[in-house]
Every structure is written in structure tokens, then in C-alpha cells.
Length: 471
View 1 (cartoon, rainbow, N blue to C red):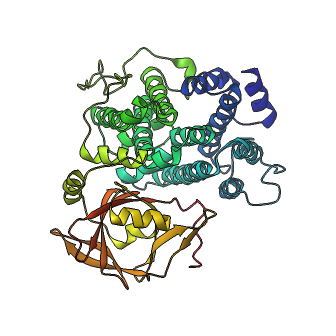
View 2: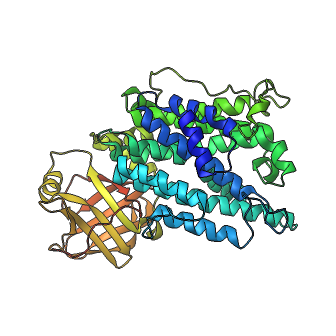
View 3: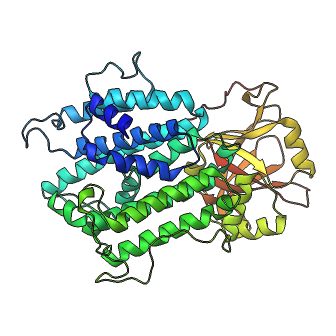
């Protein structure tokens, strides 16, 4: 704790040093199996997230006396752009010699994570940090709009930005980057879905605990948009339960990435059930509005650890777990799920996707293994690289000896959806949406009686993309 307090004072960040014990305690709770240096790095990140919230919440200089923590209406966007540049690694100094203490502190945090973290997971963390800044700027504009007599945002837009700005995603993705967990990137589709559920739920609990304070500050929250206290609480509890159910197979298997996410969600949920962290000295024994014991009591209980026995899973979750673990699944189950899932459109497909199969013995599976198949890249409707493969050095390239492909609307098994039609082969690949980032797919090959099912997982845009030189 003294080390973090010294760092906070030396960097001049606008955070009360009385919060240092809380920051240290929470990071130790998240991942007690990680070394102290990792906890220290996480505590610095948490302090910075609190500081940026305080900076962007401060009144504009035109409306308030000039202070070190406030930024004028023209200065704030400039500072935020500088923070984006630090995260992107632009500039020779990386922000280390900036006049802005926030930029210097962020550069130091980023250097530490880049030194000790895994590059493929640091890209996910950087994306979450960029989203935090975007979300906080949107919240700032919402306050201005409301002050000028304008309307409130749509609930869906508010919750999307609110999940970005509550800090949960940034803490968890940083922890993942610092973990030495084999195969963690393969589990990202399940982990990221559970993380979004948790972050949205914590945002709603934050709104319940801090609603009266935020009303006096002129801020918008879920209750101001129109949710009742009971509806807000029920949504939060449902989100936490969805998170826990999604993680159950992974936590039961002992994956630290899933256990860490569960513990982060547990900490924040328990905290908001007890006090508003913006005013930690005012802990209360009153029930959380909308929850058990409140005036608008809901038939739900606070989020608490559940038995490690995995609950009954939906077939969707079972298949997502198979994808995350690299396991196998029988065609009958995949066919049942495929016919239940929603179709996809061209816009959803655009980008690079990493693929995999559900079995390894068929002729198609053997051929893809021999080719070192990596996935597919959808450039636009008329340019698809269906066979991204790896060379002997592991570099991904577009294998084009079998031609390219196009996207077309096709009716298949009673549903119209965007499908991929090979230019030179009698093959059509059909896609169904498991999540926005995971697709269940089937290869429809002429004169082949057995369908070949496979899956595609979106490669985040911030990760290095495969070369498109063709070989």
C-alpha cells in the first residue's frame, strides 16, 4: 500500500489517497495466486481509471474555477486524443515526457503491461481502454446535452457505453494479459461474452447505489432513462447469473482466466451492495434499491459464489465451450443447433476469422489439417479469401490455388442467409450466428452425403492481420 500511495502522490493524479487501501485489497482479492508485482500493476491501472473518471467528470473551465483536475471544453478532447495515442504506442516518447500527468501515468502503466504481458491479449486490453475513453466522452456529452435541455440516450446505447466505463473490462483484460495460461486466447469467445454480461450488470448496480448522488451531479443513469429500481436490480442479477453460467465449465476446470473474472464480478457486486465507492467513507447497511429488503423488493438474492457443480447448459453454451476448449462435438447436436440459430448478413462477416473443426477424422478435416488451415478473410461481398493457411514458419497467408470466393444470399434449410460460394469449387459454406464474434458453419459440398461442420471466431481488428500476398 505505501508503494501505491507514493506512486499516486508523485504522479499527481486526482484520486484521494484514502482510497489506496481499497484499491490494494480488491486487486489482491481478484487473483490471490498471482505475484505481488502483478497486483501492484493492477492497482495502478485501477487508480488511473478512477483518475480519468474524475478528470472527465470535472466541470468545464468555463463553468467552474480553474483547478488542476478540471479541463476546459477545448482542452479535454486534446487530452483524450493524447491518451488514445499513448495506448496506440504512437510518438517517440510514448507519453512519458508529456506535461499531462494522466498521460505520463498511462504510459508507465502501458509499458509495464507490455513488458510482462502477452501481445495477443494486450491487444484486447488496449481495445477495452480505447472503448473506456470513447464511452467516457459520450457520457460527458450526455451531461452537456441534458444540461442544455436535450433528451436522454437510448437505454441500449447507455448500457453499451456504461459497460465500457465501469472499469471491469479493463481490469479483467489486463489480468488475462498478465496470466501465463496456455490456450487462453482460444477461450476468448466464451470469456468475452461473460465479461460483457458482468460489466453491464456492475454498471446497473453502480446506478442503483449512486443514483441520488448522480442526480445531484446532473448525470444520466439507467433509472433516469426509465428503468425502475426493481427492473434495474433484476437485470443486474440476471447478467451476473448469465456470467456465472457461461464461466461454469471453465471455472470447474480450474482456468484462472475464468476464476479471475468471476472474482472481479463478485467483488464489485458485493461492494455496491454495501457502499458507493465514490464515497467510501459513507458505508451503509441499507439494502440496495430494488433488491431484497428494499421498498421495491425483488425476488432475487445478491450475487454469491455458487457450487462448483456446473449447471445444466444450453446447447449453445455447450458448443461455445467445445470451441473454447478445442474439443469435439457430434453432427446431430450441431445440426440441431444450426437449424435454431439466426442467419447472418454480409456486414457481420466482414473481417478476418480464425477457424476450427469439431472432429478430426473425416476427409475434409484431414485435408484442412494437411493445408494448415487458419481461417477465412471476408474483404467485401465480391472478395473472400476462403483458405487462409499457415506456412512452415507459422505465417498466415491466403492460399489461392483453389480460387477465391464471393458472398451471396442463399436459402438453406429454410432460412435465407449470407453464404460463401467458392469461385472454382462446388462448395457453399453456410453460416449461423452463435454470438457476434463466433459462427457455427457447415460446408455444403456437392455429391458429399455428410455435412462438415466447423466454427469461425472473429480476429479482433487490433490484432496483427494475416498477410494477403497469396502463395
